[in-house]
Image 1 (spheres, rainbow, N blue to C red):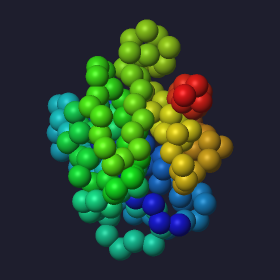
Image 2 (cartoon, rainbow, N blue to C red):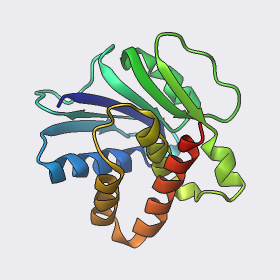
Image 3 (spheres, one colour):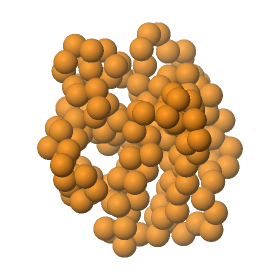
Length: 177
């Protein structure tokens, strides 16, 4: 298996947690992985971009036009990093208003921010909600729901119930498409 993911958002949204979660899944399956993140401005709401390569890779950065999946927690950051996605790659992103139509990619959008404001999902688990959504819509996603749930418990047992609930809600919302 060789799979490349770019995750992006702004500081405080949990982008780095998602990288750790997906890396834990790979570790649990005995699959090689390598990843990195930039988060110097994370505490001030600045751009956060993280890379995860699953499989036999030598360098952590994903090159332009190479990612299988772009997972966006903030719409402007998703647009900023489109160049990393390979042709016909998947984009799964949180949106707040209208999002432009993007040709050449498989685009899935969800207004998770609105669901959080309405109290339908926990705002602190918005990142895991988006991951659950991606799990349902991305063909060939490298991990199962059960593998993600196990990794959630292993990484953060204190908030495991809330995160598993968010994962399942994201999956459920995507199931209605």
